[in-house]
Image: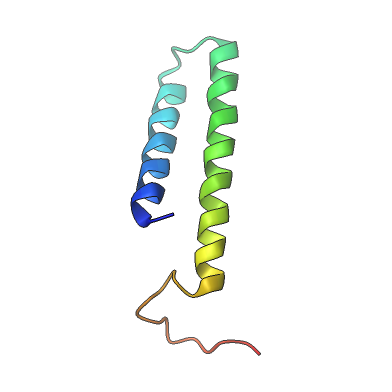
Length: 68
C-alpha cells in the first residue's frame, strides 16, 4: 500500500470525524460512521506495522540501532 493509500485513509478518517463533530447524523448513521472509522484505522495500522517491520517507515534512518 503506497503512501497515497495512507493519505486517502487519513482523508476518509478526517471527513468522518468532521461529520461526527457536526452533530447532524442520526444515531444509527453516527454508529455506522464510527464503525467505518474503526475499520479504516485498522487498515492503516496494519499497513504502518508492515512498513515498520520491513524498515520502510523511515528510509533515511532514525539513527537507532536494530535489536538483535
